Length: 411
Ligand code: MN
Image (cartoon, rainbow, N blue to C red):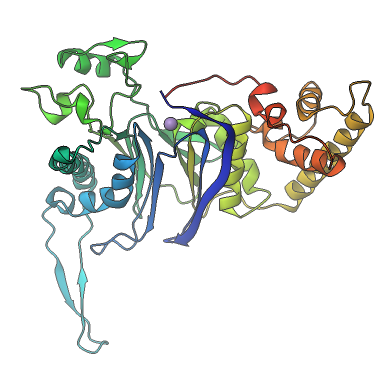
């Protein structure tokens, strides 16, 4: 499933913002895929009186982008507007003596349990809503068979609520290590498999009915029509796992949300270490996210890629020492590329594949942890292009897979 381009689309969609003592940056890139099916949300200050709260999400669509698009625009309102989320808290009207008679509405914050139940209800509600929309359209001949994962965080002053449905993933870095991460919903997980089998389905080649690689998702209504079973008992369930992590003002560093295009080629600790090392050389969060995405492409990811980075006040800070070390590394790489190119033999100027392979076999000090040489490929390529302005633009030789074999994955 999913066709590939001859050349990856490396243009990125970026955004950043700050508020509520948070800073965020995000990047998303189509990569090798023919379609871009990822979507994302970033909101600082929630509606309905929850201004100190924030919400971030990554959606990884499959078989189309409709469900991912709709979810990125409407999931948050389905969560915050349902009565379960708001609980029984009655709006309190406060008289504001200093103002011009204006009265400020203050809403009591929902409890941890209300948030958890409200999020679950919001997911089931938006899923049902999207099913209605797609059924109403059936006559028009444009049936939507798409689905989407969702990984989100709702950040309140006291908690981070991690929300996961599918195989995108979120993690929290605290005190320099991965403190928490969400668990992917794969069809072969025992509990997922049990539900699938109870609904009359099977798990083959790690997929639902040998076809779908995730066991929970929004949309995917072809997998949600088993009679006599509720919405959370179907072959594919829209029910999210919600986990409340109490915040630590001193130790919390950052949250990363990303789709499987990232996690396929980077482990939790690797991405955490890489982001930490980047935060020591720049405070530009969009730039860090772009580096993550490019690094994953060069590590062999063939999927769409999206990453959201949310930093707390305890995140690593730029240090002069780290900046200097990075500059020295770049200079060292530049001089090595020059040397490698000077050694050109009878075959003429070595191509990028040769340069990267040569560098990969060497012991280069101070490469960014988690990113390694892949995170420096653009530096190498820039010098290569500068020294070789007349080389043939041989995209084949520049494809990352040809110097480092990546695992191909078709979902
Ligand atoms: Mn994906």
